[in-house]
Image 1 (cartoon, rainbow, N blue to C red):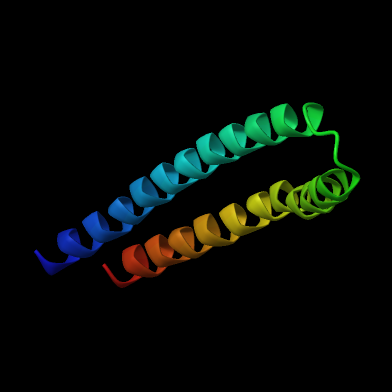
Image 2: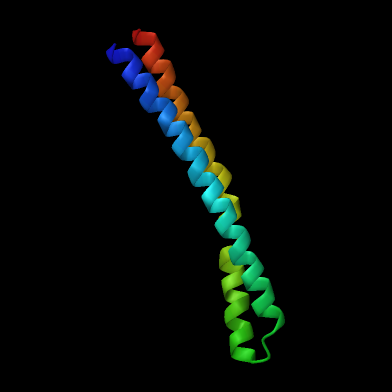
Length: 87
């Protein structure tokens, strides 16, 4: 019976990962929409420079998301393999 509890924990981890990725994607979409609207309406050169810097920094975030997702999914799959190997 203890084996079934561990399987459930791993599947709960996968569900948590999917929820986290969905929340991250929705948040990024909203932030980029606000960012593009704000950038189009700014006339101050200092604010424009700050928005350009923010945009350059934010542009690196989508590049890291797939790497983190693959690492987490890989660790969950390794956990499943180790679990089934013992059982």
